[in-house]
Length: 75
Image 1 (cartoon, rainbow, N blue to C red):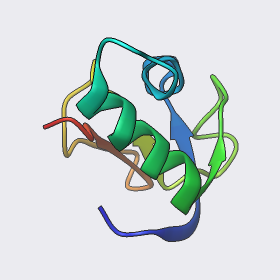
Image 2: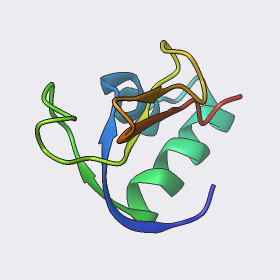
Image 3: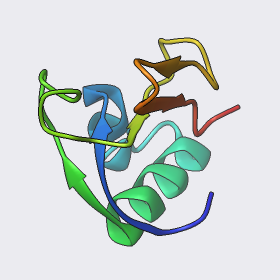
């Protein structure tokens, strides 16, 4: 994953894993994402103009309305 200056959306699981003591690999990935991107945690990712949505629950690579790309950082 490359750092970006675009707005991005984080699924709440990404935030939870950042503080996990039992999922070390996911913790490291989550913390890297949160440090290297300007993030918006919002249920309104499209309305906020986000370009990326990090989530382990949605289809990796899916593009919504030619604007929002869904990425699974643990894939």
